[in-house]
Image (tube, rainbow, N blue to C red; front, side, top):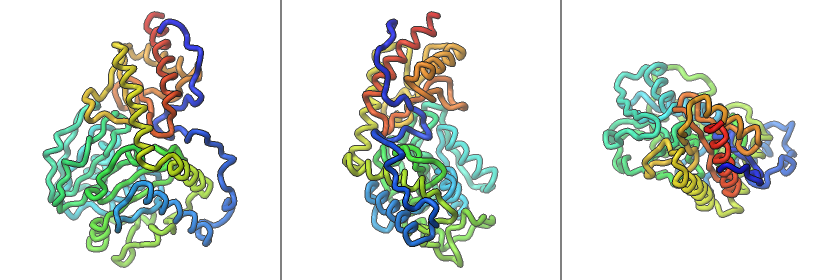
Length: 374
């Protein structure tokens, strides 16, 4: 596109974390009654429990599955899961982007487990999932936030597995169907698909995970902020709204606001639909422009949230394009992750309006023309 577009997105925020706020969001709508109150007050614990209940209802967690609020965003939640649960069995690790590699490095370098199999793939691809052994514990990310690749389904996980499945699902939860019955420890944060605030993590545990926690003690010490058991028993209060450390009650209200919005638009099916429709917008744009491609070439495992793209541009020109899009206030924070191949990354989760994405891509066509011929 050579002519400059006339209309700009109403919300040019396409960052992959923290992600765009829900449509119509205003901080003035948040309930501020609990600000300055204790999170351990009856009112504080009631709101925390409400967030847990609403989340479980929207996601459709199976009976017997627990959900708790823990420190440190998704990173803290997943580290907590690994440090508490791993070591009882051999471990298979799948990774195809930077955060999955971090989990692999921590398992081998920090926990120092010996019986570990690592199955990896370059950015934009998936490793061979058929190599996973059902008697091993499994560690993987469902959606590669930095690679634009997701596992297409849970078929590679055995229904008769003996090991536990630990899944980092932070950019998948609320935007993709997850086979909860095949997952034992799942983590995510508020800041991704629902666009809420950072620093708070969510940990889902299956009954099998709880059984592991109460029957196995790791050989390494656990700091207080990681402890899920006491005297060999699960600290069940964590999953009823009694947090390990102090949460932000303002962030809590922000998350509850996002959950309420999700309910009003139709719950999980509507959230997934909004995200998949956003991906279709990008797919149509890529199909009509030969200078841009998906990092994930195979459509079967292409992410519908963190959409990663490669461009026919040298690195300096790509940097100019990203800067131009931000200067024009049409798309912020769209550069690819620092460890990923050079390109662009558009967040296409449920809080992104399709109309804003369409307009941003029109501007992208104009910006490409400016930097490639300038």
